[in-house]
Amino acid sequence: MIVLTTAGNSIGFEVGMILSASANDGSDAAHVLLAGTATVTAVDRSADTVTVDAIPAAWVNGSSLFRSGDFRGNTT
Image 1 (cartoon, rainbow, N blue to C red):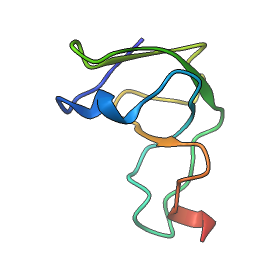
Image 2 (image 1 turned 180 degrees about the horizontal axis):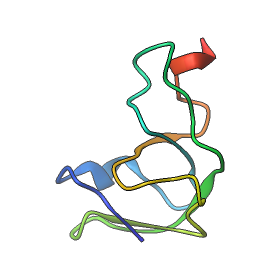
Image 3 (image 1 turned 180 degrees about the vertical axis):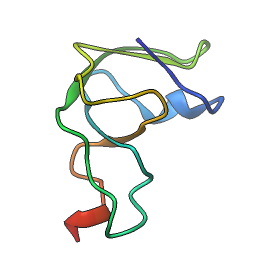
Image 4 (image 1 turned 30 degrees about the vertical axis):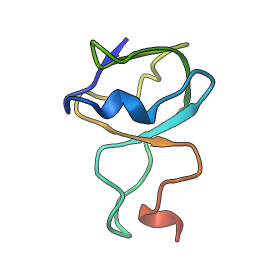
């Protein structure tokens, strides 16, 4: 389970969404994605938590999450 640090951010997640993560926010060409993706299996909007099928080993606390395909960073 992933606990979101900003209240209300759970509104941006839906069951079935495929997520990618980065140690950064993706605003700079030097930012890169961490290895692996995860699929959202549940969202608790009142607790601001997101449950995924498995958290990739490369993901760390404080990672920025992105809908797969929406990351800018080194991909543009």
